[in-house]
Length: 311
Ligand code: 13P
Ligand code: SF4
Image (tube, rainbow, N blue to C red; front, side, top):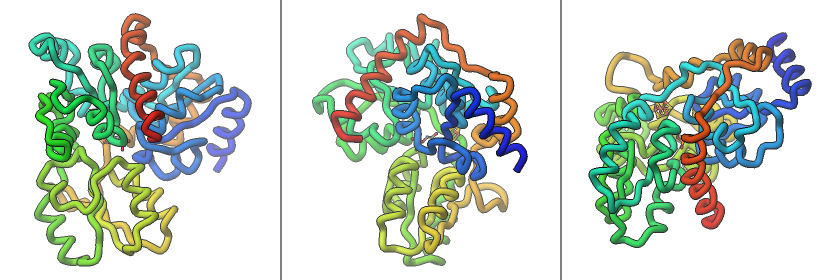
């Protein structure tokens, strides 16, 4: 309680805003000025007029905010909050891949380092990836990285043959097809909601495939009462808050007995670390000016196309 009061006092005193991703602990989401998916967080950061922006999410989300707001202090409660998907695409190897296919448009998922974004023509998130890919003529040769599951999904729904980087998220790769089939049998009226970072075999079982924000929106408007949710379990907090009379069942991973699926990187952020980073104004995200300048263009392109498409 004291901690929350201190955080409130500090954010007022320092003109700071707290942004949180849906995968954060519920108590962080409840305290944030804004909670959203990766696209909404980037859109919010681009319009933010605070002096300090605290990104309760992972490193690439902080980097994206810093690139959009170079004059602001951008803090992340724990700088070790990385992303296995971003790590699966080192910039030097991605640069080589891009060099090998010089006639290709490069589309990168936002879950990448600033250095990878600097090699990219347009950044996308899971909220706008399909629409941004479709904004290019059907025969445009495209490199899509780094998530092979999202890339395969977009290839399947658009009939394209984008060249894919072979990366994945360790959380979304883990969902068990067998156990989701068992859950569907146990809850025959439930809809299966899945994030496109899940494997193709899981997406085939899904009634709805979408970003965290899209899955949440669907849960709110659907007339079903039960949902099996195949994405990081932090999203269940907001789903249960917005739909107190509906039941949300986390899809289980392959291994172990845990009924949840948590991103260990996202969960590095705690209320204590949020308080300490606001108090100390550290750790702050820094991006080298050269990389930031090159990474800004594809992020701005994403924001412009999304605004045009009303996303
Ligand atoms: P969203 O685009 O739904 O925010 O997904 C971000 C993410 O990290 C998924 O693992
Ligand atoms: Fe990265 Fe996966 Fe965690 Fe999302 S859930 S931040 S993709 S490691």
